[in-house]
Image (spheres, rainbow, N blue to C red):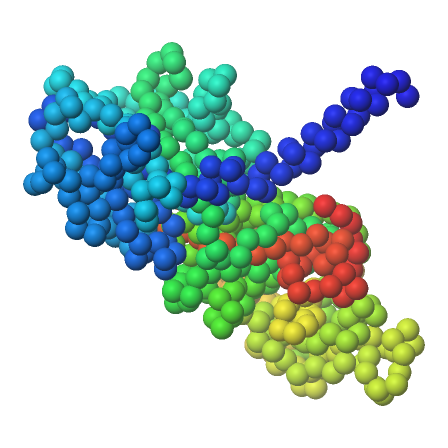
Length: 591
């Protein structure tokens, strides 16, 4: 290796960690100075200005002194403070108002004169502690003043919703958000479908009801997201209008943060743990899949489950730990994407996580479907590997509101001293007398110390009895056979309802007795009736899909809670639970 190549490689090695650390560690200014306010304000001569300054809502900050001072050569002379002090010459025209619960205080200055131009600071504590933010005050003698940048003060890992309005003249114009940089304004998102790669899966742009208005929601904010933005209508520096947005990110400790990616294997499952604040225990919680124009709701705590996810997703709320665990199984390539875990209470807590489905073998195995007759017996079996030998195993019956535990037997523990590799590692769910109401989805799963792990789903078909009669099928089809209707993915309960409504079998029988029709005619009528039912089933099912599809509008929901770690599937078997060790999970690949 030449000396030049060696130097270049060393340079790159030194450069990469610094680049990786850029988003992990805050800039020095953010650590030393968490106070934030407007960079510049302008007031009319003889008029007034109001300066809004933000600070972290810690117990100390809430009770600390707030002040507004004017910069001098070597000091900052206090104009007004929350202790009641007002400097001479400002009596009656300056006031300070603190709102500790919101982490903000306001400074209002009236009777503006040209002599008020200059540099000021709003801050906490003592004037010389550097916990302050510089604000430049300008005085305009004209009839109008420029619109100031809108300020947003957001916790690290939190979210922000920016609303921009440019009037009906720009209703059909391109809407966008760009970030100011040295080389210009970098496009972040626009209505043409362009999204900056650094914001993929964590930003949404949605038109509001008012013409020319739109909102932009950004989640999982990092240190690198702080800065000056422009939202606009038209083309930057060419046509249209813009509005300045100044975003500041501060470090908070409200809700745990974690990795942003989870891996799952095809046919397997993932367990997603979402954290929320204690005050949000009674709020609506929901999980949705990100799209560029909205977030498709999958499940919520009120019992809603999207038709496309019936039988394969559930939500477990643990108010004692302020967490919600969402389990999604029967993973497929179509599940790749970004998911948001949210509540309708807190605007700032929205978190985006990416789900990647990879090739691999699930740890839990068993039959996808089991068929039984009314009053007969049924046995649902679920096999597990040695790594789950000491885990708690369970069977439950899936419903939109949760998964009801069922009594099951673990064949893997016949005797305390049986070794794992010789044991029959199977969890059995037995039905001695099957009822028609037993039909549905059943899950087997494992958990440890109350933390949910892998799951798999099995559907129990029940023939005969009431449901069998409704379905018009006296005997279940063979396991290897798939009827045309079931191949369409139509729920069997929908088929049963439609068949009962149309009463196909009695009508054909009546036709045969009264008209004395030929066998050919009867066959044609029967085939026509079946095809008619299939067409009706397909049309109704597609209608239900369209009707019940819920694309969450940005303007419709306040949002989210912060989601915890999606740990690597290589270490944690596609579960984001940080307390599970590598030896407890299936290795399925790395990040």
